[in-house]
Image 1 (cartoon, one colour):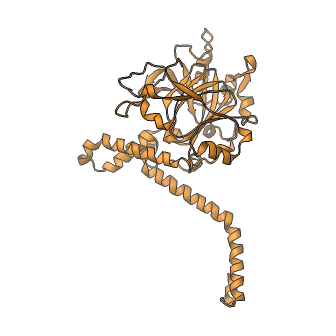
Image 2 (image 1 turned 30 degrees about the vertical axis):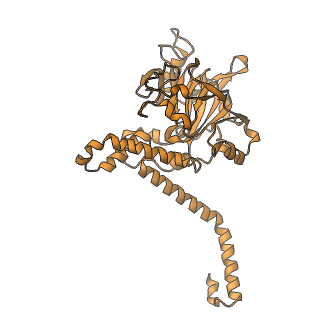
Length: 383
């Protein structure tokens, strides 16, 4: 960054091994505050398999390992030098093509992923779904209460065939990703999908994060709250974004083998300061479920307002609103309701089985006491 943003503090760092789950909830999850956790990745196979020793005792990506062992037919890659609407232009290529671009070909080329003038960043790779038999890492205990991915492991999020056909099937399968990018690759300013929590672990490399608290998020939108600043490194128009100069940011330089917890609704922009591989999860649970609902409701109002002029000629106006909501946000009211019902039912059944032996013991004690007092007849023995 070149000083266009006002950094007022650093994200707190904590030794993850010295923190209990209850302390993590009280200090960070419940109050919705970011934190960097160290010391939690030492046993991950990815640390050994995915990296090679580099200069200054730092690790670098072992790209040949990925080419040999994970020959994904297609991976999604962002061209960091090309904007498309509110995001970077997305491409699909094979893993080998991506690695060849990163390394350069036999005729020359740089080692910074910039062979043809474009910086390519592999994003949103559903590694766990594609290679379920290879255990690269273990989710830290602070993040295992993951209702979103737990649900998606058994059920699709969309039932509507139009939505299912519109969206790539793998994109709805889970929200557990691997990211790989050369030095200089980056992610534009955004808040995470569904306003979920996310955690991001650097297997190798270094990243710079800039965070803006939810209480200031209105200051990075235009006057109509429709257009969001794309890149904090750009010259931001004071006329279009009159509140931007009032924003105050937290910064974090995330080192290799550190994990950052990104709370709900915190806008952030991320730059890879070195060649980097990271593991990222989005998730939500009881502590941030209200963020998900609030986002759905606000986006529903926008989707409804956008097509209000065709209400009178539309046979199923509400259905169209819900389809647009799912296409734009990732789920709609129906998806949210089905998710809540299924998740609640699964937990009730689980609790039932866990407590069944205790209930039977109590029932036997109760029935014996009733027999002793003469309330029940001997026929009650059949229970």
